[in-house]
Picture 1 (cartoon, rainbow, N blue to C red):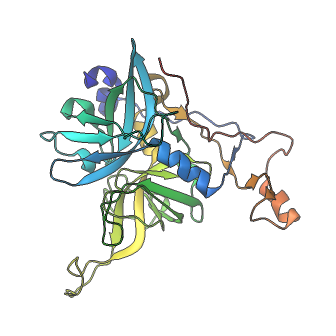
Picture 2 (cartoon, rainbow, N blue to C red):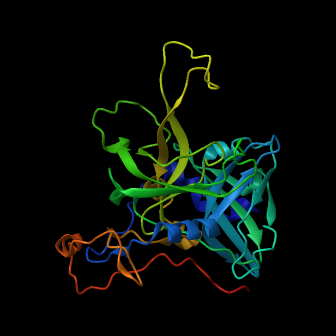
Length: 317
């Protein structure tokens, strides 16, 4: 039963909020190429289908072992799995080391597999499998401020030009941090405190927002729309048009509600800052000025940069 695996969550409302562990100031995570971030997303992002034909996305963030069973944990937006009366289908990524022709496995998700978190639009979903799936790494959303590159991954609903359900990975940058805006007087925003320019569509709600080191720094779930006083009949939204700015819930909101995530559900954490000196075998990419590149390293240059982008590839039991 799912409630047996997530007992600590039921104590969230009355527990003391605990800050994430302090980060070693000289440790850095290496930024990687966008295509490599996208490949990690493809291994960890799931699709969650509702009986009415709508669906959302989510990301695998943990695994716990119960005997010879693997219980995988998916973080998504609560509104994706909001109705406890419905039975959902979770479409997982292809298992590690499997053939590209192998169909993606499906899992039945009911109310006992879903835990809605308080005060934010987040939910944990579990599924059981003896297959081995990749697990994403959680980063530190405190380092993701205005101008930071971010990527959103998920499965949007089919459109006119793309009539099939296809994994989409879009890049952009953080445009605003609403949790740091003193003029932001809204009493409740359901946790949606980070805004970015990445293109999103219906169906991508619940999908991860990655930083430049492929770590999960937010959960996507909302698109900003213009407020219009007159109805534009030419718009399919009746006058409400997307602005191009979208919003997510910083991952630190989840960690504050669930500080024991590392030990209880097998979450992988790397809360270090990003080093944006991106390299591959051909050398430095996007930084031709050596003096500028040197300035990017604000810490001890003799300390090796930690690569935290490799997903969990534990062997099958």
